[in-house]
Image (cartoon, rainbow, N blue to C red):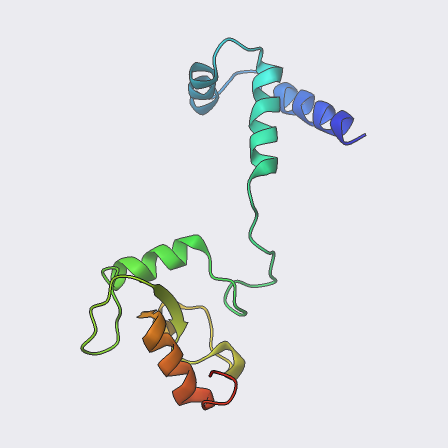
Length: 133
C-alpha cells in the first residue's frame, strides 16, 4: 500500500507542475533519460532514505540544534575550541553556555564550540563531578 501512495503522490506532483521548473530540468539532466514520473519517484525515494532530525515543537528549546545553527556557531568559532587559551580543532562539540537543564536555549548567544575536554570541564563546573567520572 505504501508504494501505491507514492505512485499517487508522484502523479499529483506532475499534475500540479505541468511545466517543469529549472531545478526539475537540472534533475532530469543529472538523472538521465527517464520519464517525469520516474524522476519524481527517484527523487521521492532518495528523500525518504535521508535521515531526518527529530521533530520538536520549537528548535529554540531542547537538545536538538539545527544544521544551519550548528554551521553558524562553528563558523563563528573559526572551527576551534572557544575556551580561553585553547585552540583545539579536533573533537569539537557545541556547548550550551546556560545548560538546557537550567533553562538554556538554542540561540547563537547561548551556544559555543568547545573541545571534548573543555565541554566536560564546563559540565563539571556547572553540575559537579558526580556522574562524570
